[in-house]
Length: 475
Image 1 (tube, rainbow, N blue to C red):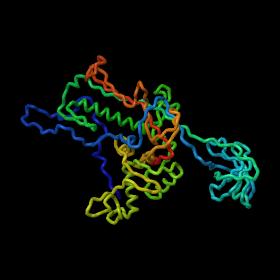
Image 2: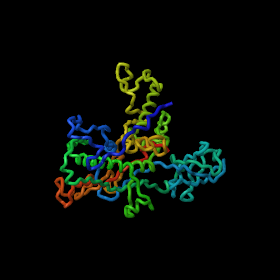
Image 3: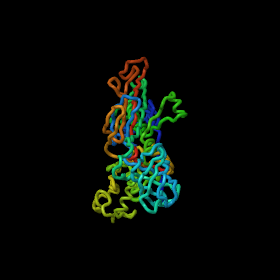
Image 4: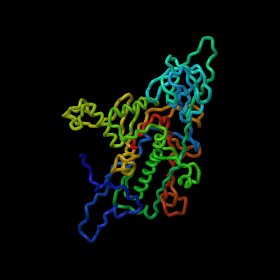
């Protein structure tokens, strides 16, 4: 039976994000009538390491300006034609049949007289080859079978039909009708993200004895500097997490009312992939057969050669264990593995039990995603269950860029599959705005005895070709 960590002591979730010296931040037992002074460490100890979680979008995407409230783009449709919900009005062994197409969203079929089709029973797999002889209506077509035995399945059987060519008699006219290219139009809208830090002038003139430090290298003995820098770092993290988690405000929602009735929210990465991408609903793929099914799905999508899998710790370990098992690791002893890790299991060298990538049909590169592990973000959700419905374990992102028609630019453009668009023009750049108000800290633009540092950005994320992404989650 696997062991587990005790529930206490645990990790702290709430920072002391205050503007004053708290009792939890400083030693309080100073008595200068006592001849014995405490031995103190002046510099803060960074017990949580680097606390920022932003990096995902910087690794896989790019940022580019936009001067509109809406970003629209067109993505290519399929080149070939296939319908998966077709039923025949004819009986088994009939030489001809009329099919009705009932696929969702299909109002006018792209099948024409003279085309040759393959028709397969969705259940048994038996099939016919046929030539289209008539198209009576927008969703029906009539065929004549090539087989002397006629239709191989019963009346009203659900079938799949796809076009594989055409055939005409000598001396006949050409194909009747033509097909227009099919595009899918997608759009997203930027959201405004804000934050602010404020400190009064009196506290700015007070020095502390603790030397503070932050992840961006700022140091000093002025406590307000630490709070301002942490506000800035927190805001920069939100610039990324908002793009990942954003959802549109639905009609009738409270958020729509709170935002004044205008279209609110945005389509974040998780929302788009959940709705238009591929979802692995069993948490983590743990076997080669699981990855084979993912590869099979990618074959049916864009078949992007290189992909990056951003994972939480559980999915990372599952991939390592799967690959190690394939390489001779028996789950207990790695010494017999052929080349498990970086050093080929040389007993005189360090053993690396992790993999950074593998190839199975396509190249998959594994990268830990701090956002999914951090206990103050998604890493803290369902911490005890681990497999609760909705827990996200990873995201597969295609590498490289794709060509799309940009509706605003009016031309084709190369864009990363995942990228951020921020509002900007010659007069206003809202990628990352910061300004100071008040009468302290160098600011002299109001009579407020304080310094207020304001942060603002207006942006959205564009997820191109969501059908090439895979979201790993439970449920």
